[in-house]
Image 1 (tube, rainbow, N blue to C red):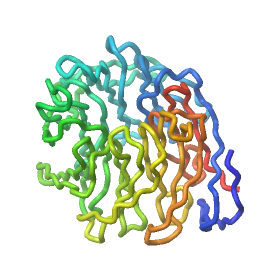
Image 2: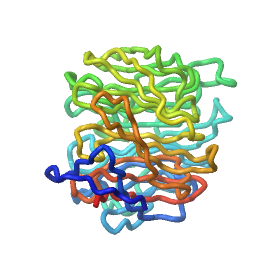
Image 3: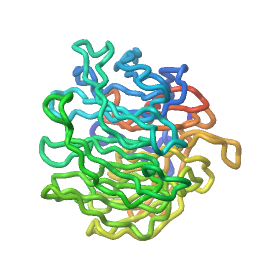
Length: 387
């Protein structure tokens, strides 16, 4: 556990950190039998008002019940091959998440692989849910529920490759929005949002323009990154020329009027990079390298971890770096302009990170970290506990 240098002041239910502080997160392993840990999510599954943890593992979709973290299998053996991604969000306002998953993972097959399922919950949500198959593209890789307007959400699904694509060449990747009907077994409306990239890796629903009711999508791949905006039933694309090929992309904020984008470059790369935006929330500039000693970087997230009005970055990787280290680190700036950044280990060599999520799991006003490990075969909570 990292030692915290005491320099804190209470800010309501959060904690403010001085510039010379080191964050303190207490690890708790809630599962040491994870096979791969492809995808994680945080959301209230059973409607008790407490956020639970969901995991898409190799052959099972499971959730861990807050606060005991009892493990419940809700889908298993959906396809011949592995599960690969999960999306969980309350889209109908009933206090319980809706869940979709991607499966039949085979990145070498750009014709016949891939599967998308909506999981229709059982009356007892600790039991197996009904898996409803949806039409899909090959090589399904990532998915998120995205807000299109008040009480209007879409499941946005991204393959890794375009159909029939060979060595990253050929057809573009079809990023598709699925709109859920009242009866999930009825036909879902599908809209192709974007199809010009050839190898993509991740997307992030983000409130990039704070004036719009809809969320935008930050979308990244080998050929670069873009912002996808929805209004009046149409999708608009804005490229970020400054961002090179990247695998992970997230939005963060230095202040409500100073957003930033953070990426891992290149795809499955070794660099954590920061881009800042002007007040117009349109252009980005000031490419800043935060870390070039990661390897197979596979997870990033942003949140206000320290209670200081600025958001921090959490990054994880799954392959030993130049110093033979894997794990999860936190990065924070010590100035309002975001020019000076520090970092500290959250988990050094105890987490071969495949995916991670951030959320307040115990209602104490502090954001905690959840990470799933590939070669470490574990799922951990890192409790945000400044001393």
